[in-house]
Image (cartoon, rainbow, N blue to C red):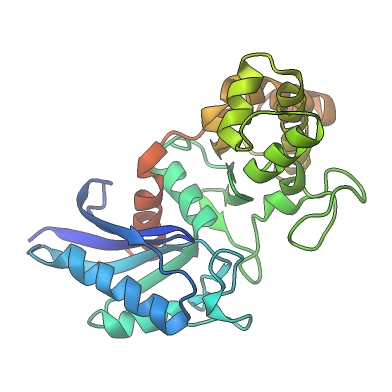
Length: 308
């Protein structure tokens, strides 16, 4: 009987459950909107229902559960913490891995935050294949990241390793929703890009895709906002390059859709702000997994912790 992993992707807007083989083949999938305003118990109920639905009618041997959570997590202790889009867990952390295991026949559960889990997925299945030292950055509603160092995920003491969106790129700069100032996320996330474009005089639809499309068509305020976003991402990456000396930086979401606009600016900024022997050996590439990323992230969370 084939061994498969149950993957759970918990997002602020939508969530999914998949059954997947160790080589990344998705065998079954169920998705649903994440319930708005649910507390921890309600979210566990929701994830359990998704898991039961995706397993119904499947006769394979489910060996464990991988969870990719769109919230801060302490992977070692299996805890998840409050996030702006998922506030139901409490500031002290909720034992999500244990709660799911008890609901799902005692299966082992591996939990990662979604940025770390996606870093693992790109490393194993996507643009990170063949690299031993890489940085993954997701550039969307926020900017998150994950580090693979010497072939292993680096989580840090309390699971906060990889918070690349909160590297200060402008001393005492724009306020960030995290409470700090001058963070990369305050300049280069999707909402920040839109807000800055409007400040520069953009008059189109106030969305990230609209700003990108306008920049591609030569709209001056949109181009100025995109250029600034690219420079701020480059500043953050230059800092990471000097600290970690990775061989590859993988940029997801915004960089995938606007790579033709962003990547040249990012690369030039890194070239100017990092040593040439560091910058010259660094590849900056768009993520490769596309719509498969979060499904494979949940699978990769399990494969990082358990063997099949």
